[in-house]
Length: 210
Ligand code: AP5
Image (tube, rainbow, N blue to C red; front, side):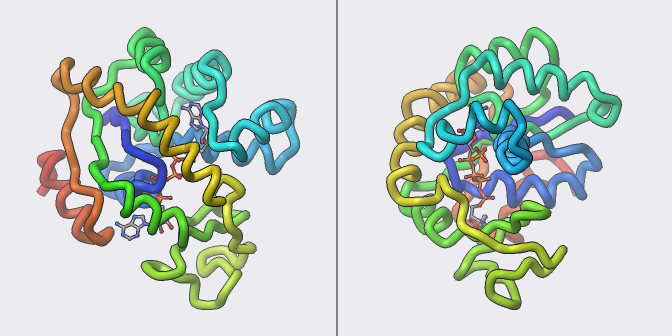
């Protein structure tokens, strides 16, 4: 199954993707995670994208498309994948269509108030990338990841100014993809407001999985 997870920042795409990977047996490809790993490694890509990400803006299409195109040539994604955070612009979607055939686009529907609550309380493991939340899913020991013992931190782009910018960018550049994919008959909507277990049930329903 070749899927796109589309939705505003903090809608819960990454959180559901972790569950969906287990359900569907496919790989998650998160462009945000790839960029964060590059920043952490201090690679040339990381140096190029750090300031852009911290400001809540999008990395340029050329760089992002090349990265995903290369990733989709790898053996582990030939049977399927979940693209989490890509495409985010119409040119990215057009490019994707030229090198892979997506079967469904899952659109995460959530009001801004939900986004603000989720991003405002998000805590992330620096080592394994697991997403915690101070209210909905706190780590057992503050600042320490339950899964790998790594340091749990606040992403630089989860500062209030960057969150605001990311929402603006989403509205201007990513939201038009909803119409783009709906017209192609690929879009399924999912109510992203409930707690994770309920969303998993809804996800299975829209995917036709028992
Ligand atoms: P990226 O990492 O993709 O950020 P994003 O799209 O803004 O998505 P988030 O990771 O913030 O949110 P999410 O929807 O995955 O929510 P999560 O599951 O974590 O991108 C970061 C940056 O990289 C971009 O700003 C850009 O600069 C660059 N970039 C990436 N892709 C790009 C592209 N294609 N083109 C150009 N630039 C690109 O959940 C959020 C919180 O809520 C967590 O704390 C979680 O525990 C909690 N939560 C989740 N679900 C629930 C629930 N159901 N109930 C209660 N709490 C929940």
